[in-house]
Length: 529
Image 1 (cartoon, rainbow, N blue to C red):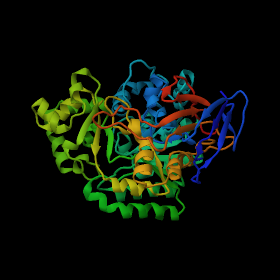
Image 2: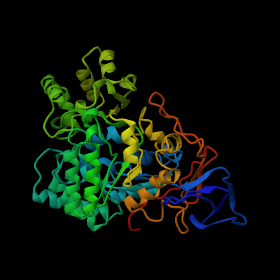
Image 3: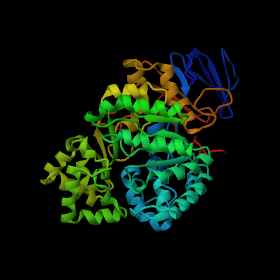
Image 4: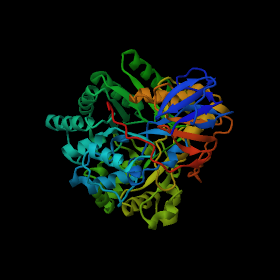
């Protein structure tokens, strides 16, 4: 489709002030930008009183399984997202050796969900991406190689000390997977088996990422009590490997740790002064979301989900779990040290039996099951085989604004899509424009759009997207800056935002005046291709 967009206020994503300019999209790309343009026979969009911006890029997405099952992703498209980055937190779809399919599906379920309808026997990143290409995708998708998948293929799911042979094998696997066009490596250092790794292992893997000019995307070991030590580890990895570093969902958790914000920002600046390239993404909420199993001590996860389930059946081991959760273990990011049980809410489960706990916190679940909250939680994880999602409250808005203003920041959803999710899954990008640009005036319209498009493209090395520029792909969102807002709440999160009139992906109109057109307009993006 060839399109002429007229009369709109164009904010091109560069950070420069907007202007009233027309845009011609021809053969999927932006053909011309200028005043009073004409194009005979083209589809005309009158954008009077609306903002014309580059399509937004979600740099932390958990759609990996959902789009394999169903290629259309209205949840993101209705926010103006035209490109998303898969393979997050070190645990995702590929690589996946056949012998690990069963335990890995259980390990992944709390983040990305579960499905019996897809073919799990693709084995490699290349085959997974080929499956997406064959099925078609609703928006543009790119992939990071997950550290946990690589580690699992090389040395299984057990917690054992890594040796030189293991590292060499991991590097070989990673190099093979990056050749398929992945954009870098992700890790989640609170998730198993990534949490079993040491700094040297990550340095060696990141040297391979550097060979491919990729990015190292990291959910660091601590976003709470040990955040300073944790950040120093990641900075050391960046310094010794020369890789580009991108922190996932950057934040400081727990009231007693908010005092570290100045030191955290100084660490970023000092690292950049040393020549280390650092960026981070952020979702605009004071609450987080992940799999409930992260509240269990790390030894419970040793050997994978099947072993975890066996341990949850033992009364003696439950008593040890409770002791460790109440008292902590050195080096472990213990959620219950900074988030009380009544601030952890269930978002998703696998079975009908426990649907009644969705939207309830762990104290409420204890009352519902007439048990103490610890054992009620253990029962839930046992019955659901660890496939339970949750959200929690950790921060304050002043910190969100302070991080948002930093040059290194870009926007993400980090949205888990199953059950009754965190509202960020449906509203993160409109919330930036509605609350932080219009209501709070924390950043300008031009800054907000740049952080949702061009900044993200630069951080991940995404070519010919993230700007409205001649020769770039026709990924565009058109919205009303006076009405755009997120509408989801924690009580009712699955509500689409307001104020977005058009979304165009690769020159195809996929959202028009609030109506979603179910077409596979996206592309699987492969680095270097």
